[in-house]
Length: 215
Image 1 (tube, rainbow, N blue to C red):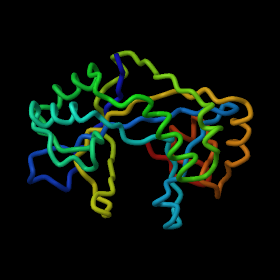
Image 2 (image 1 turned 90 degrees about the vertical axis):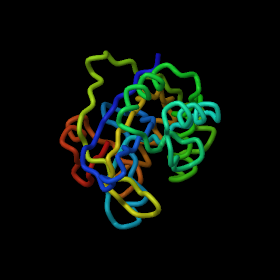
Image 3 (image 1 turned 180 degrees about the vertical axis):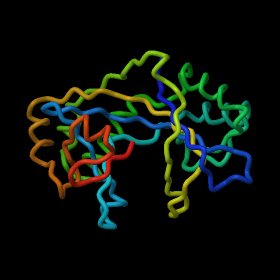
Image 4 (image 1 turned 120 degrees about the vertical axis):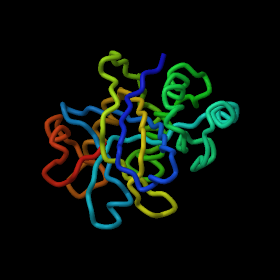
């Protein structure tokens, strides 16, 4: 069974709709010399702002999964193709959480795809061959560690940054990185680069010496 962390944000710019936004994503935990490799947001970077987060991104469902969510749970306004980012009635949230933990209608290798997209295609920090050498293990967490906790959730919707009422389900993967790829990442990291190595304490503090750290 897959284990998803779930975060929620009560603040909303869509109070009149009666719907909540659901977002399902993967996060890749990459540890190098007791520090964690985080990537800089490209949107913020272009605006001269540094914010860091673990590599990762949206999870897709199959055509069958999308039809099931639409017909059985009333999911609507899917933001992009079969990405699990859509609107849902709050009354269906528990049903969706159950479906998410047990369904076979999720894409395989989402973590590897997102890692390649972020480190190779978007930031050009690794080659495709180097990225393929990295493997990912889904992290198992005890049920007690999966509360719905409040957090701010800003999203680019229609090109506009909005604060929306979001329940964000995140699947954590631990990366196993070969020594030569680890060395490449370490060499690419820096306070003005698109990759930064930070400590666990900096993550808990929500910032490094140079950057803000988000989820």
